[in-house]
Image 1 (cartoon, rainbow, N blue to C red):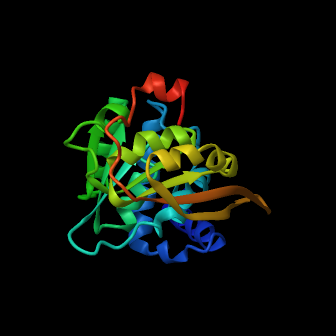
Image 2 (tube, helix red, strand yellow; image 1 turned 90 degrees about the vertical axis):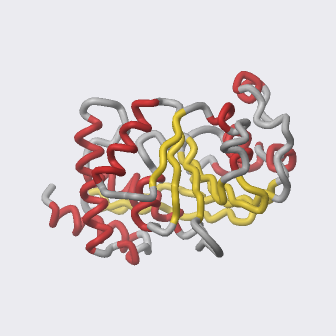
Length: 251
């Protein structure tokens, strides 16, 4: 796919999903460079199951950008965001591109993946990306990182009640947790009622939408939910528990 074809495909995907505000030449240049870099790296290591530009545009970039509006504008200083289980850098890298005013940290337990995100950020000349390698349940108990982020986000990582115990300890009091979910969100939200209560959170937004994708002459769709929680109190010291306990006995 040429750069011109990529730009056209991006503009079509963004228009289809009502996010054309991101179809500027400056953003499209970054998305193009990111996609080329990601697909090249993917030949050597497993970053994504997607193998072509159109799929990356629709199912990674567009999907992430649908949630970008939930990142608040900082009232003072720089908004500190943490992407838990960042993997191939989604949504960390798209968020960093369209929100140069934030500082976003990519957290993953796999050093090869955080090294890839660091390389991608350098390649894209993104100055607002930080890297954290380690396990969320361990780092979330570390005073250096605990309750130090304004917003914590996660996409395609784990079931919501498990995910919340990993993510909420990183979130400042009155901060936000943004969870990008698919078609099982309603069930996960129901199962997470106790976790929401135990971790002193409240659901602010359950934005339900369809991710639209052009496939030949057809338009296909996938259900998406952007869940936004507010953290109302400091997290009790018992959380996060050890991962074996979290997985065996979710909240």
